[in-house]
Amino acid sequence: MDSRLSARALVELLGLWRTSEPAFDALADGIRLLCLDNRIAPETALPAERELATALGVSRTTVAAAYRALRATGHIVSRQGSGSVTRPLGRTTSARWFDREGIDLQQASPPAWPGLPGVIAETVASATALVSRAGYDILGHAELRAAIADRYALLGIPTSPAQIMVTTGAQQALNLIASTLLRRADRVLIETPSYPHAMETFRRVGARLVGVPVETAHGWDLDRAAQAFARTRPVLAYLMPEFQNPTGRSMTLDERAVFERAAHDAGSFLLVDETTADLDIDGLPRARPLGAADTGTIRVGSLGKSVWGGLRIGWIRAADDVIRRLRAARPTHDLGTPDLEQAVATRIVHRLDEILPQRAALLGAGRDALTGALRRELPEWSVPQVHGGVAIWAGLGAPLSSALVIDAAEHGLHLSAGPRFAVEGGQERHLRIPFTTEPRELERAVEILAGSWQRVTAGTPRTIASSTLAEAVV
Image 1 (cartoon, rainbow, N blue to C red):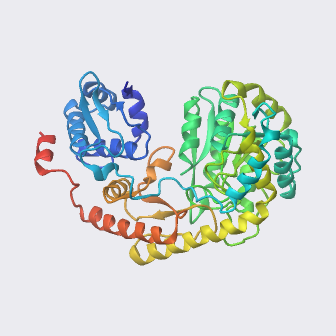
Image 2 (cartoon, rainbow, N blue to C red; image 1 turned 90 degrees about the vertical axis):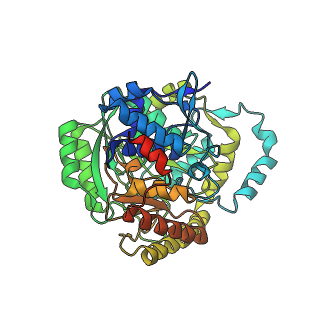
Image 3 (spheres, helix red, strand yellow; image 1 turned 120 degrees about the vertical axis):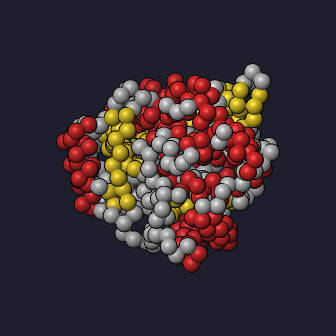
């Protein structure tokens, strides 16, 4: 059975979709991007033409033309009883649009640390002891929580195991925090651009997002941040102070002080996402952790990017009373983190000082290959020098990010456009390019990008038959 997307939900997903003319073309592009980002799942029934036209405030002719353009490129198909339905990957009439056999840089996930199979084998060898237990744990194994707490203590944040909850990845940690601490219409201060899944998590519980700009060149807009805290009194301030995703920027001590003071005065929780904090490439001294002196700061970490995305282990570090609230709420989400993954993670955490330099070398090779290729092939772009993290937030110099991503997808390169990371629209002048794959593949990706850039800046029409375009604009 097809799932159905309401007109209201599609309008929210589209955001500021009308960035070009004609309107039907802009709408079709907006829906294409949602399909490419997997924000609209395959086999999803789109709203009826009249319903969507009313919700968008456009004519039904505009929506009908957009749907015809999407059928022409194979993104949707007309199905009796369901209307217009998105098509599964790899099964379109225009296969290039959804062909995932190319280079996929939508996910900024490095390959697994090479020593991981050996650690898993060691853990499985002791499986007899593991299977004698329940198989999952709502708070987390005492040994793993102690190992994580010890690492916080080394950073100058005294932590007891009781202040740690182990989760099934960082995303589950964010979901649990949002559903437990937020109510509908609560404000959440968040950087823009920022991590898209965090934005979606907060919106899902009905929170209202308050954006604070951050740029690769100038950092966080401190005046806007101070004003936003004072004006909106957010319940949470979600921040990535180390190697921010997607900009790669890290907060200075002065920037940290402003956020700490403003959050304290507003009575806001600092929710610090540290999933990229260990991904230092150049060995720069690590700054004092954001909110280190505030016992109310909530911290989220994981092994996803430092070890492997398939090792679904994350954690929350928070005050005792917050951990008690999260523990009471967790059974409505899940019953705990599996024992086997926790046993593997315990061994891994004890070896992080060995693992992280290897990670730095891998990410450094990718970063250097990507920045070198971009500066060579696309010299008009602004390519920042980042010192860690997983991606480059490239400046295009023109509002063409969405058009570029659509063209690149036709030629086998899959990326997420700048607006995907924006809180309230915009970011069409930027593109996130992860450097988490091997250097040769990154150089090939830049070659494809350069070709796409040449086409979109020349205004080359998309690959749609002229007869179809003529029909669409009737």
